[in-house]
Length: 64
Image (cartoon, rainbow, N blue to C red; front, side, top):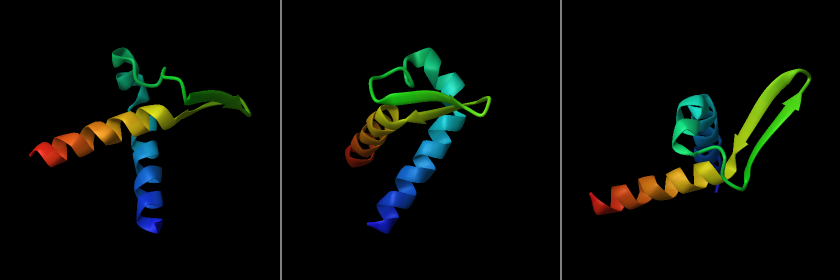
């Protein structure tokens, strides 16, 4: 259980860093992706994009 939690947190951090590049392809704008401003900083929680990209990576890994 803890391993999955670590993977999801690391994937969220990675996708948050890549969000400006991924937004050109429509990721980060899906329902379930949250953008909010707190203390003058902008934060993004790409939950649905993370789930979709993880599913895509799993399907590619199973196919190979």
